[in-house]
Image (cartoon, rainbow over all chains, first blue to last red; front, top):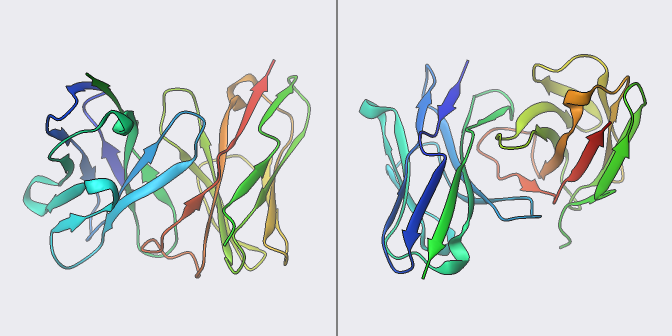
Amino acid sequence: AQSVTQPDIHITVSEGASLELRCNYSYGATPYLFWYVQSPGQGLQLLLKYFSGDTLVQGIKGFEAEFKRSQSSFNLRKPSVHWSDAAEYFCAVGAQGYQKVTFGTGTKLQVIP
Amino acid sequence: ETGVTQSPTHLIKTRGQQVTLRCSSQSGHNTVSWYQQALGQGPQFIFQYYREEENGRGNFPPRFSGLQFPNYSSELNVNALELDDSALYLCASSPGGGQPQETQYFGPGTRLLVL
């Protein structure tokens, strides 16, 4: 069974600073990996996904993530954070066969001026 | 293209009651998945429907059931509500057969409180 760990429950960064959110997964085969963002009162929005090819994935809103098989990681990065990026971020892993996606517990991002 | 909508936005029920939550998928999306998101947790997969048939289920008891209709709407039914059923319920639709590489489009959710 697949699982996801997001070690950071809460992260605070200054506006304009760089951001890295950590994600570690457990899955026996090549995983399908996702990052979602959830703003208060909103549903989940897909930022980016990886399932094959280039291990550096570009997403929306200036986010990118790098798949590192040796470390079982799929960390999310952004070079310069904007106040509107304050939200909760979820890493997720999917399994071949059907769309059972397993989510991590999320990292809440706070952006300070 | 309209997004995924859910109704109601909020709901309060008492323990033992039954509840029906509704989701309207994007037009043309044949797959709908339902998730439960408890406070402070990530969403947990309940089940998935493809062309009106359940084709995947997470670790949820049978009192969680669903229906999908030909008009791209769907329902999540929960019988014999328990206090732990209090959560945000999300539906997500996707255009294909529900493979993991497909993008899922999430609705804003229904927040259920069980007293």
